[in-house]
Length: 422
Image 1 (tube, rainbow, N blue to C red):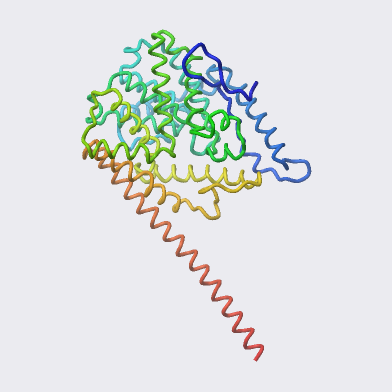
Image 2: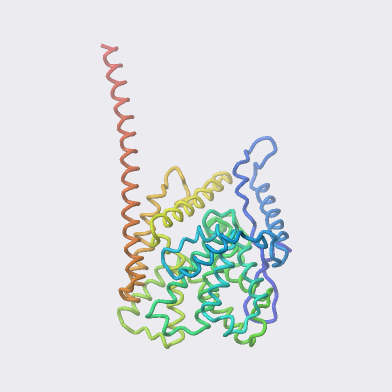
């Protein structure tokens, strides 16, 4: 049954079938509610169910799609290889890299990083199985999403690679830590539907019920990842206890990206730094810092150069606005930040940087010390915040001018009427 996302396994973590999410096709927003077209919630629900079936069927259980077998022009391959030689640089342009790899940035990047970090040799990974798993992950991201897509996953993975090289952390990391960090970064948003948890709850989505309205998306990303690990058998040669531990640690990492737990993790990080009791030889402390690194990587867009940061900001807001329009079509209350008429890109970004990103990256900088990367990220973040504030001020000035003009027009009309009456 498509409604049951769980797969029974002998022991350990429940996994989910790939494509178990309703594939929300935003083309339905272009339809009107007249003359037999989508006009009721029931009809929309049927459409989403069909899209879920279609999405699950087209994936062909991990077989590499023909598009990714397309041979790139040698010039493009050469440029992609050149970019990979600079994958540890913070100004890495993931959008350009995705174009150069014909939309296969996540698979190409992960294969390279697994090789660079010596993970293939250390864990004796079968390259065919590894490639199959990575293709499954990449294909389970929805390319229709402006933001939560495979390019975002590749961007987060590249950021994670940079963070794993920070001296304060790098000297303590084991090969398992590195593999967990990269895998969690790559799969942390897999099969994201382009809508948030409140939308799933108020539409009574089966996953909201399955996960009792708690970290619904993150639980789905984790269980889907476990399902793909098992289906690809990429870790099947490892001891059972080790694979179960990997699955559990991946869950802990991916679940930490729930934005609703931001204060929980930030407070704990501050306590450790204030008490100076972080001991990275300790497995639990090291895992906690991997969680913090993943959280930073997930929301690092404001720390990128303006040209890249601005693109990500516009993409995430476009995804918000699509949800808002879908909610309007369904007769639901429009979620916060999803009303394009009220929530502008600059206002959303200023709020996000001020209350979410900046506090986290300030504490990350306290952990790493004034490394070139941390200093660079905070400089970009503050410059970008200033640019968004300037744009917000400009928008408000224009809005006030229009309101003022409207008031003047009303005053002129009143004076004219008064004069006529006299």
